[in-house]
Length: 276
Image 1: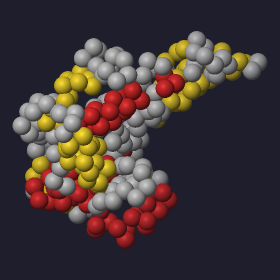
Image 2 (image 1 turned 180 degrees about the vertical axis):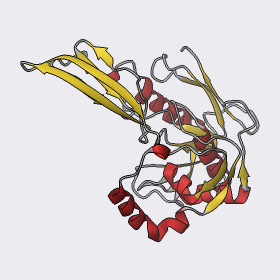
Image 3 (image 1 turned 30 degrees about the horizontal axis):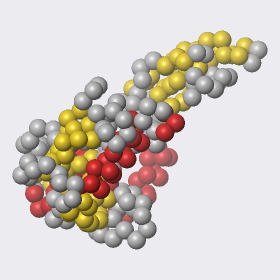
Image 4 (image 1 turned 30 degrees about the vertical axis):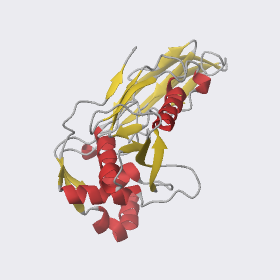
């Protein structure tokens, strides 16, 4: 956009969740990205004369929340709103032996855990979880109910259980991949690759539409995905009206509570990336 639209001085970018130490300069436009979750604040000073930006100064400032005195009025308001739910939110559901996080275009450990919960609690062969990055990371140790809601809460959180042919499954994944990796940025719909459980595949982001996904197989027995066979698939975050199923946060909570302690997946990453 900065390369095509003239006259923009500053773009305050977001959505990628990435923090950029120095602004990206495109022509005479600077693009500033400050990360997510309040980890950084960007300060931008502009030198403006005669209606034009003559120069700028930028500083990406890390926020060390444990050494900053909270605003008293805001802290009081948060405590007041939170009080009726504090005990429920802070209840420890289980433990994690690894860092739980969401990052990048493909699965993170939080996504793996959510997919594992879908597989076990919904008795599915394959799990699909939306390609989103929001939600706070959790250090090794206790997992609270609030931690679970941090990565699952939305208005369409029903965890469905359905059947898909192998052909339909590949079509769905090809459509998502094209939304992300289309060579024309105006056809990139945002988001990241759908997260998967129970399924391994190879992706070539630079390939043509319909040819990016290959070598799909079930992790359980290593068998290739048969286009004509029907598979039991669980997932969540469908925008279709009438989607039925338990809420995903309840599914994840039940899985963690039953496991007691969750660990990293034993197998190597089920996703192979080619061509990058």
